[in-house]
Image 1 (tube, rainbow, N blue to C red):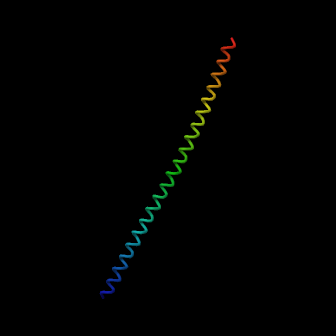
Image 2 (cartoon, one colour):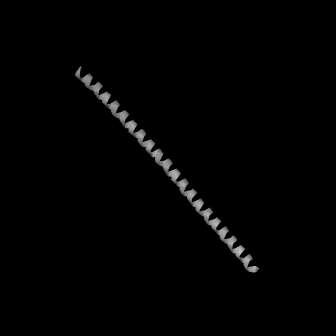
Image 3 (tube, rainbow, N blue to C red):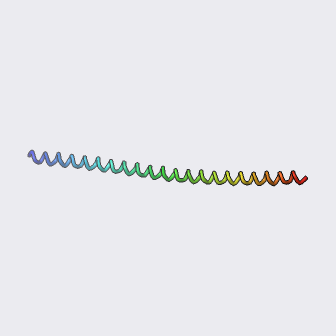
Length: 77
């Protein structure tokens, strides 16, 4: 009778340990998924920042070109 109780107790403990390990693994997978999402968003932000810098540089070049063009008109008269 005692060994049957021990076996049942052992089985119960094993199920509990297995469930805890499975829950921990699930949590780790969720954390990894969130990290991947964050890395993806960071990459998109860096790309957007680079595009913004490129557009600003292009706009400043256009402004400089226009200023040069207008100053040459002013000196022609």
